[in-house]
Length: 101
Image 1 (cartoon, rainbow, N blue to C red):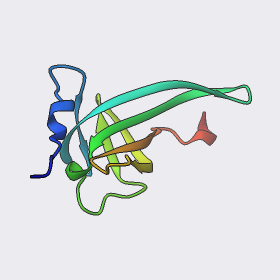
Image 2: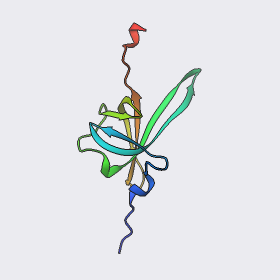
Image 3: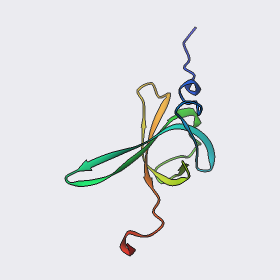
């Protein structure tokens, strides 16, 4: 009998996972917002690590994500080697166009 991973064991909200939505559908994942610096430019790099089977059908670059009461869009999707999990690379949705700052 083959071993089948249960991703929910790694994504418990009572430990370190966050509840959120992808395209309006509920999802649980591990949210990280790392500080990055590239060529003297600083910024944040938000990601959401989710079970691949929890990602709604049709999810792609530009799909809306909400986590920790903030709105994001997906700018990258990186499945793990086992394809049980996917790392979603996010970009925060700006309420004000950059040209108007």
